Image 1: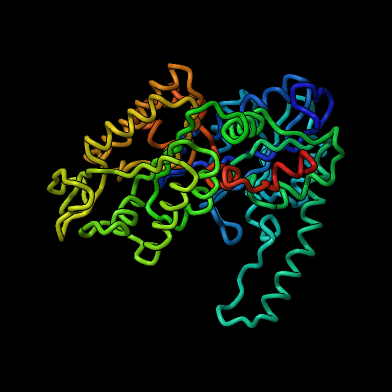
Image 2: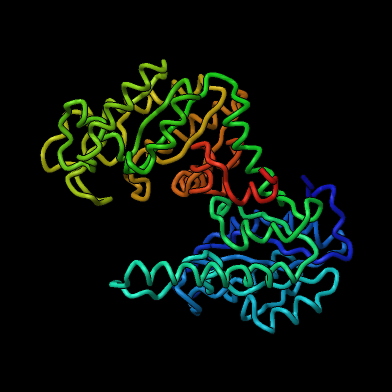
Length: 420
């Protein structure tokens, strides 16, 4: 497999798939440019070599062309960060894009309009009536798949080489994230620096484990984390189940959870996971106390109670001090740590303490030689909110991609470059 470090981009045009799906406010100002900054080393390497760059990305989930999701809004900031007057094509596969890509000179950059303005990027039909028949759905899907080939060929035709630096979309077999790679030989397709770092971080967590290995899994639903939990049970020494999932497990064990979030149809699943953990010798850790509130609000009345003794009309919104101490003790003794999901409703300042304590324990463990990987939108938001990002080994830019990789799935965006 070709690596970006060893490739000389002099005189070459590189199609670089990035993940510039950044949050914008109502005035289209970027509120967090982390993803753009993460791609800069790759883009600058190509330009410094004497190559030119064609940037492809998506923004949001448009159902067609839309000013709201236009990448033109981020153009000035990308130009500023790169130190280059980035050109813009109003249509990623239109005549303007072809002409501008063809005319690109070494050191120049072209940003294509949102790839997801076209259904062909994702390969999914749009605009079907709700009452469309199975035959109509099948025909629409076939039509999109057929036109997807031409869409992909057009994108590939702009460049001499392909660089995938969008780990956040690596779990999608989309035109620009996986299918396009087939149009370049092994020596002309590669991961960008960000993708390389992401892949190495995941592989370290999965294959280069220094024990004890502790995973902290948060989130509101057991159902959304079932596959990753089951896979982790084959790898970890300690599995801390926290966040909203806590209350499904607590109720399954016979506890009273008041109005706390709970998947009543997953109680048997929770018990089954506890049984599997015991069989595999995994220390599955649940909260023992919780910070409860009388309403879902930052200004709610609060109290600390045992997690299985939440009164009616109250709900658990964070872990309590006893649980914080238990989690911190386990984390600080660990040498490999994975954190995905906060301990509570960290968006409310009055319910941030548990997540902050977990983050601080991870930072301390990292200082003592542990490898720590933080991933998933909420966990990343946590470490950024608390100013802890620099204290962990790696903060992943991938949400769904990271989870699927840890589940043990082969990601199409990675397979397309590696060839397996």
